[in-house]
Length: 505
Image 1 (cartoon, rainbow, N blue to C red):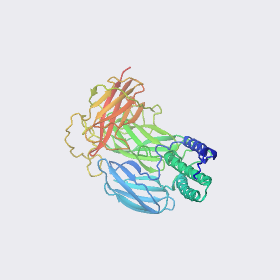
Image 2: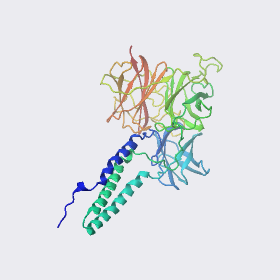
Image 3: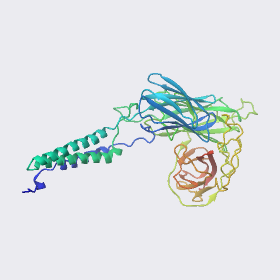
Image 4: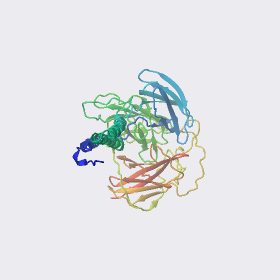
């Protein structure tokens, strides 16, 4: 005779899942999201550099095991010189050498996880990039997943055997219920694993304990070498970073939008523009070579992020002298090339959406020093620079090679919506592009906006618009005239579209 079992007569262990699920959800809710710019195990490290007159991105490929291989790739915009590389383990001092160029990666072998230094050399310039070799040691939650499944499998087999040899069937039901609970827990962890806290990978930097996270903001000194460069001559812009609470050099920068730091240099009148990525030449020191075509006051803006701290915009200013005048002549605006940044220069930005408006061509009065307008409808840059061509000599100031013929007359056309932007309200900027944009600094496009007086700088990113146009959303904080530069990369290089925006009162 078959005996029917009444489930209500037996206490069901599945009921224990309710408090277990609640505990798991509380753990998930308490987990802080990972920092947007933290480098994770299994992810490539991409670092933009401006070296030997070229804009390039170094890609340090993820390492899956140690000891094991480490590959370093180079992406040029549009091309890059051959780089001499030197990999050094900070822990034991082991050094290996290699070379890399676009399409020819360098291959190294790493013996351990942890801090390393990659020295990059080209065109007489050298950068030292600190990074960490990280290897995922496996999540502790995986033990629960596989352990739960293994236990459930054993219990299911045991339940079947118990049911076959036990006439009452109650022990078989209990064993099977516990196995079902194990499977349920394993399945729940599989679903929630992306949000569960992960253990630190091997080689990760030790985090401070016993105190709240966060480090003081970076202080800076912006100078030039020579102290008073002359127009038309090459000079070095130097940014020295230090901790205001200790006075020591700050050497814990996080990779911020695929660069250790972004440097924007513009002339006071907005006719000169550079968006470059300086080299780390010493702890707390960033440098990049530039050349200005006309004398006057120049403004420098440095975007960076310190580990366990927020993003920052640092400012500075220097003066370029007229080579026709004695170098001892006073600066007409009273500024000195080695003076620190004007503290009145502040940062702000906007992010929202707007409606379609009228179309305006790029302002020819505001020229760009990185593109020459070859991919746009704007006139060529007055200092003869062009980032869409490569001379192949490593000299960024050599005469550019002839560019391709522009077929799309609308390329470089800028549409601002609404047609008359209002202060404190979002506006949409659309830029017609020539060619297919490729990722640069992790984005399809960048928009940099500066107030005419230099007291405001904003930097926003493209919104992911498909097609042959880039779309940005930006809000101006106050009425006035704004210089703007939209940038994107194609196979021909980096194109910059300069224009101006008038925000009435």
